Image (cartoon, rainbow over all chains, first blue to last red; front, side):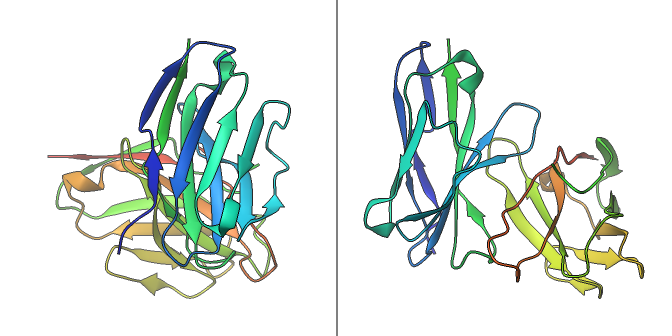
Length: 113
Length: 112
């Protein structure tokens, strides 16, 4: 079974630039999550989708972050404009249903200079 | 905020059992205990979960105290590949949308 795919694996940008991350969940998984993991800390949920609808985006900094899951499959997370404190690993996860086991992708490591 | 307390780090000799403790003294009756681990440069990986009975699978055993205020994850024969950060999480999966809330976890180093 193919796992959760994410790209790119690494990204370096300068502050105030824009960046986008892509996630392809496990086939058939209705629930998709984006987490932010700052160095030395555990992952923090940014947004949760159920199919193509947003279930929870209470922790998403909406002035600069946006996410979408068109057609209820792939998802993109965008940061515009980036700040230094956005340097982190961005993890995508999916689950068959909202309370099920979550499967994580390898993450995208973002460095903002 | 995470509802669990874990030691920051632990060492374990290769081939020995690794016992990772977790305190969750404010756990509610409908909350399960979940364990995930994160190997360097990878995403977290599910290990095991339980409500009140001890659980075992191919990866580990989970021992939950009778009062459910603490638990221990046991890796029976630790290998170098078990070196990772281990997260203990409490969650009520049957109470609607309940996300995983990660703390800082325990960094386990398995030493040859």
